[in-house]
Image 1 (cartoon, rainbow, N blue to C red):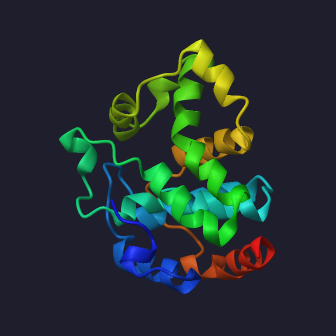
Image 2 (cartoon, helix red, strand yellow; image 1 turned 180 degrees about the vertical axis):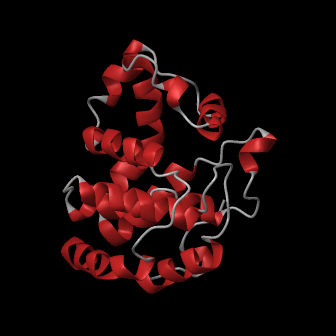
Length: 189
């Protein structure tokens, strides 16, 4: 797995370029990475989420774009995309963006425990990756998750992730989110 600096990403324009060059990849879902990102961000905006959660929704799967094999999960390997993506984005945007990203897989595992029938509503790719990611949480893991900072944002992000896999084209493009990202970058220092 590669980090942001080692693949030449040092600013927001580089993140935009990464999505322009690798966003057309699929990862087992019926939509491309870029379309999934745009749908998730639009869902967050539709719920009047703060800009940090909109950007987290947009960039939550950036860790997948660092992989050479877009179907790594089919080989039985968990790419830990949430950890790689969060670590990469933290220096740009801070915790309000990176923590929900870091926790969005844990949020799936959490929801599988606390929401009846949640797991049966997951897409086939999400059901397969759930196994690689450790399966549903047990009660102790759920309690620990609820103690994590930004866990509620991670659950919201997870819901956007689940819904952002529709076979439709987004009305916005990636560049329309650049001003929001720049504002967050300035706020993060």
